[in-house]
Image (cartoon, rainbow, N blue to C red; front, side, top):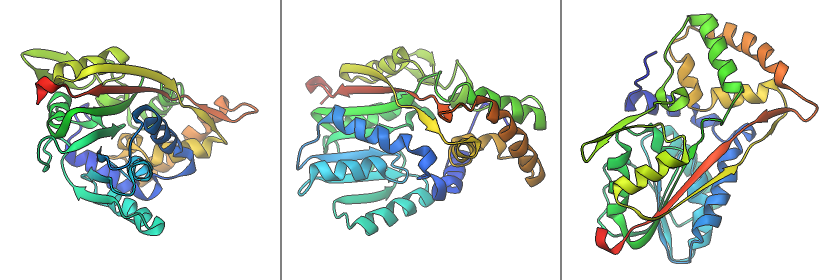
Length: 293
């Protein structure tokens, strides 16, 4: 596997993991959605754009705060993720969320339409994060809020390094996707300046917002980790997230060998409390200024 992952490959893996994305082992996503609501203080009547909504944890949380007259436009490129989101909308009888198959970097919305734009754990997948944030600012009203989240380098460690080591024991050395392990990370060019960042530090997240033209930038780091019951819970995390990209090219036999080896390895991290899933999260928040109108 190369360090360059195409949009098609990302869509493919999220289609594959959609049915398991709401696993209890991945409760970090609804936890963080609740914290996002605390940061944003949404109001009834707000128009919210949820970028890369996935199974809709942010969209569903936001819909409650902006009811009855506010609406959430939730977009994603994974049809399977949108299908899972629609199931929850139907089950909960939510009537103020609209789903759209749409590229986060090319929005089909008019300028200055939304009060709030949110992107939870997806900006680091984008080909051009600066262009994406500029596009989000375009559809924001002056004074509107923008917030995205990202994982710090320390997140998923030391379990992630053990996973990489066990994968390499099966298939040999390889270069994992930049947004997962590399300290250099995703490259993007804006105003003649080359930035190398997987958006895994507060400084890089702030730099991204600043270059894109956002104002009143606030960066907050919070620990959102929790204990997994056992190694099988960790495999749920591996198998139902983008970490599955590591095994995308493996045969069924290799995947079986990896699972057996890796579960044995992860047992060494277990304590009386379980297995700690370390999740240091960056909440990057900003406002669209009047001059960006």
